[in-house]
Image (cartoon, rainbow, N blue to C red):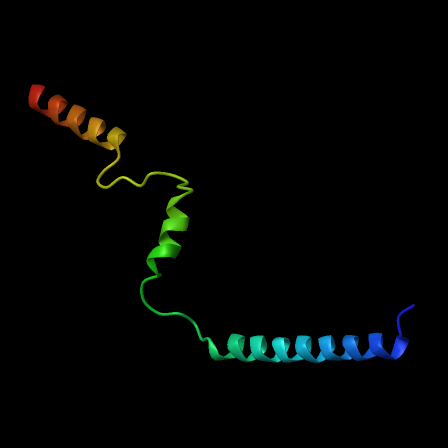
Length: 77
């Protein structure tokens, strides 16, 4: 059978370590302000792993067709 006093000592030591860890994490969280500038490369690689949609540059294809057909109609008239 284990000694109850010994168990209590171990638990109190663990509690002290946990409280110190919590305090240091709280300090770390407080010291970090809002980030500025570009995100780090590893963060952008993670977001590239799940692309929602491919963004295309320029006008949409339908709009190009409408402009082309309107130009042909005015040339014929």
